[in-house]
Image (cartoon, rainbow, N blue to C red):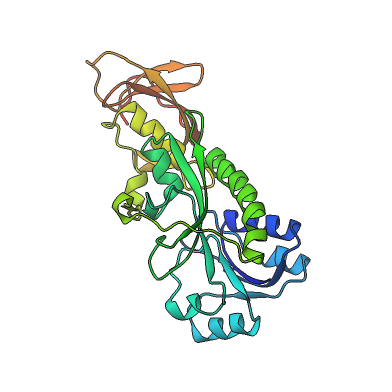
Length: 293
């Protein structure tokens, strides 16, 4: 089975490494040299070169040049894992077996953008790792494999990302033989259970101290590495809050955004509901008790 692989993020690299370890026949890799919108961007050419796999920088994956390059590899199937652009019908029809895509959410629920960030920011207790055959829609094709992933209170973007990678590795090892043998069983998505998450903006990452402490803490978890961090501004200076702790209930007679005390872990800030401890800021943040953020 000849595979052309498309990807450009950290997950793409992890899945490609798993495929290489399984000794499948990857005949070409399409990737990006850089990305202005993926903070977890990875250029796959280093691994491709090491493994002797031809690589191609596909700035426009649907262009005539990209299609010609992919067709020249005569793929039986295309894997597209970690590519923030829709594939058009012409590309979807290049390989006889189709295009296998990936989405870290329990499809048909939570289609769309930033699924790891939204799952944590919304305080969800569960997500999933889903492989599916791509069609002209966004995350709408028939499901090949899906595994539930529990989200703990201690998870942040980095640990949840690793859970998703670990689940995906197991799934890849399971469905590759089925795909090669023409025995893949798929499940059609139930549109009645679907929803689509929107694209996040920079404003979505700005902390509003009128939010509850829990909502702010979830936002910090969601935007931790490999993402861009949650922001707040003091006297025109931007700070990144990478880690936080819930500090419990405090007097309701304290305004949101006030630094009212220090703990052993950092300054305590009153929120719209309860309080939060700022445990890791960049640059170092050492406000005075009584300051307002």
